[in-house]
Image (cartoon, rainbow, N blue to C red; front, side, top):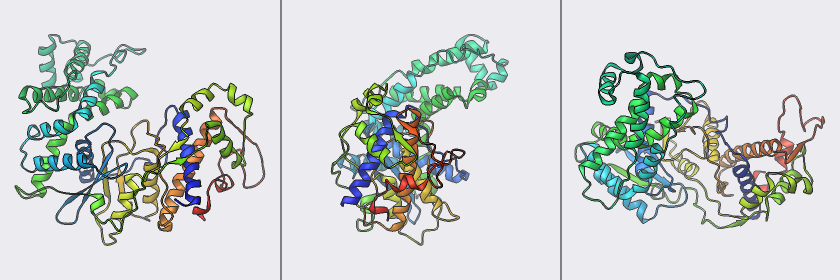
Length: 465
């Protein structure tokens, strides 16, 4: 990095770190609103999401996947932080080889378990520990409908026999307990050949957990926080049955029997045309959160810093200093790297192109993708799964290198400005910055409550000129 790039990267990394510490419940940026997809697009997005999950061997790995629709069809894979290692490559090779001749999900799941047991066990543990207590009998106890209204006819008959009652409320309570009990097991990666009994456990927990989603009770509460969280945890488990089924159907529809499922790692597509993956070199940030806030405030004309005594007496100051890291290793995330490379193919017309991931996009990648789409005129060229609920704030998000085209600077600049506005708001709400009610034109408008370019300009270095 040159001097200007390091300076701007330092400012961005410090702001992201302040956000990560202070924003207790970060939500997706308003710019990443819901988009409309066709039915075919939704199926494709679900497939690439599931493949990304199946290919991530460790719980800390983030893999993204897109479908290269030139013939023959090819999946393009990328690892979020750096290049794939030997384990990543071996996992992908084993998975796609197993998928080539698979007839059912039972043919594929043992391969996924042998390479990614940690992620599967985390998903099972999350479902088994879901807090059902208080949902049915909380502040507003649930009053169930009649038996055949609460459950479909086939489920009603099965549940009354299984739980030995026709009381819908008692059946729901029994269903809660059964979901927890059935999810309380772990897979063993070295237990091969994998027993049918263990595979049956996966089928049983999937069927039980998914059945709750079909009740009238869930339908009435599907937008509640608990319902959204439960659905997410259930789908993280059931994808190992239904997700594999979807992929087998996709293979049968688009590939000849016995044909290999083609895939390529992003680094092997065109090594000369892609953004360089930074070598993860460290940069030094401010030696304390207090110093970082001071530096930020010096460039904000419509805000002033609280005094040193006020800061050290502030209830958040100890948390900030304890969690502050003065060294960061920024790296270019996979979403901008993948799009930068694949969009060099100017003749490509199969839009939108969809990106699947085993984890939702971080705050900066989600906004980068939105701004990049907006820069494409009438056609939104790339889409990914929207962040659900809280969004991750990753402090290692790297700005584009100085050798990149001007368009990349513009998109990165929009991400930078979003982070600036967000951290300023969080610091103000925490009482660490004070708002100046200055009425000079171009500084602050009390009625609109906006950040003006005069604030952002002080933070953007030479790389944005």
